[in-house]
Image (cartoon, rainbow, N blue to C red; front, side, top):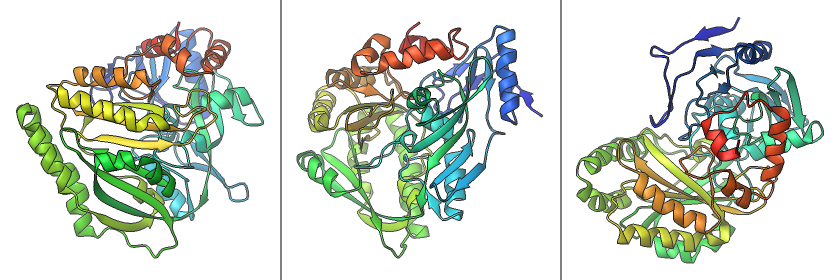
Length: 439
């Protein structure tokens, strides 16, 4: 039995608190049939429909003034096919629950982002990714999906069935329908050894190609107002497991990376002039460490300090120059940036609107502490990123529109034509999609 629920004030807010919406009603369907019925009923009432996950997007991708679909009852594993190496899960399943369930079965996703709070459908629809030399985003690991379209019918998609929809809907922005189930490629559970160590930014940029070539998963964090980074290299390991000790893990991951960092950001927000000094201390706070654990525990880490984020994918070869320009901009400005800049990579994939579609990519993510003015920083950063043909993460702050996307995505027209066919009345539309995909 589906439940119709409403928030206390009828207001929905995202995780960062920078997006709000006022849906007419909220529905939590308990089956695909109930979800189809909710879409048909919305059409009868002339209302638009959006599904929302855990609200980890910083854009209004999921905002609606119509019917808000909450998929919390559509969770769990439907089917494991060990022969094919796949697992089919309900769309509302949180990544953290999927990771634990897969590990119990001796299975794992090949790559992960750095948090696992999101639902599988929310994470894939916005192009969530980690870092990888050979392994790509979470959406690139999809082998099939099930979609409720604007007329309430259920479409099954894979490379062999509705292949055009499959090519687009893996990163579909919620514009083509409501995903109800996803089939992922999985592999036997494996261990990763993480090596974290501080390194000067100049050295990281000079040796970036080598660091990328020599490691399966390389990423680094640059601390603005400093010349310092913290690097992380993750590579497969034969074991044995040597997880981070409970006490040192609590001290570094909770006390320093979350607790002290939260206080430092409070101080920086109250006294912006103190930010460069705080950044210097932050960049030296985390010491080098090496540990080995099952993959998802190494890929992900807790993120309790709330922030607003912009992230762009640039061609991988443009990364060193782009970051040097970003640093020069911060150095000559009056900006005070208390959050590190995160840099990751992904190989080219074949998904229509993936940020890595058709090109090897490097990701540069800029953040500001929640409640701190961010527009001047993000505007200046965005000008640098777009000058390099950057593509913004679909779930993170950006100011671009369909005209820009038509330039940087060679297959943009394929996506919009498919949307015209599947959702001619824009049942799944909203203001954000009107800007990014066009009317």
